[in-house]
Length: 426
Image (tube, rainbow, N blue to C red):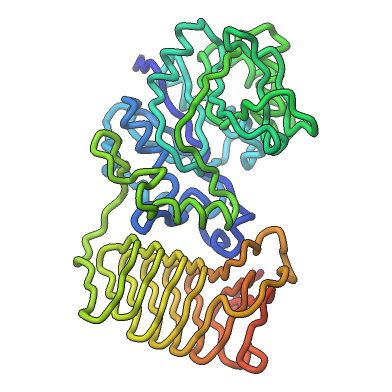
């Protein structure tokens, strides 16, 4: 039997509904990030940098782009005969065929995959966080404490702690209690959704809870382990970690990359972030173009002005256009004499001439105020924006729009336009 000390199970099936139109056709971990990467590149790179060469990636929602991106794992050196990366979608079985119904249920349904490596330890990860972490250091901590479960935690301001699962520990770091999103938190140690389980403890918990509906680690598995008297420890992490689950946090994390001294550095030699690299020409910046404090992707052509923005690969920005505080993903075309202010424009969008995005005063979004906020204009992939239109703040657009879709040539702040292609349903 093959023997691996620790394997990783990476949960990448999430829809990411709080990212609105950005995730209508793509799983959250496959969303572009930082002009060059996809969100899943970060946990995958952490795995190989930590010496973990066996990773199961659990997919479910809109997995096509994720599967294509991961391929056989070559960019992360995970194309191995033994181990490597395996994409694990739900599959039909002779009985009890189910979609994954919770984080722990997804892992339980892949018990056979884990058993074939006979691991000592299993690392459970989310596919939608931006951070660098050496999982080997966490494993050493797990071993030193003879733990059954080690949970990575991060100190957060106490007034924000009620948004998280909170761990209460004794002086030795052992978890004595935990509270899921408590109204009055008694600790500021927030769970990061990163767990190391000793294999026997994980197997026992998943088997015991196999009939639990929507079986989840925070709600079911951890309380079960504690009730059974298992040793649970908190591993405190103090580096950069960001859950990019909302448009605001996604925009913020991209903007932090372009600070003069970035809090999260993509350029460190000793901890590289790997990604699939397409062969594209170098970028071109015209003589009278202006580029100030930006990330510019390969193959991009800049003829206008770009300030404080993250620009993906193969983007063209024409003369007279000014882009500020925005994220423009790959294969986007923006015409001439336009103004783009605090926008997130997804892949393969075409924007006409004389377009103003992010104009006027803010107003709450009419459809999903909790999703489309933060003053951001959000444009879904493959959308078309006609020439000579104005688009306000907290707006969302998806589809091939025409001038007639904009009353008086304008989409007021808080407005939404969703055009479905024939044969598509919203």
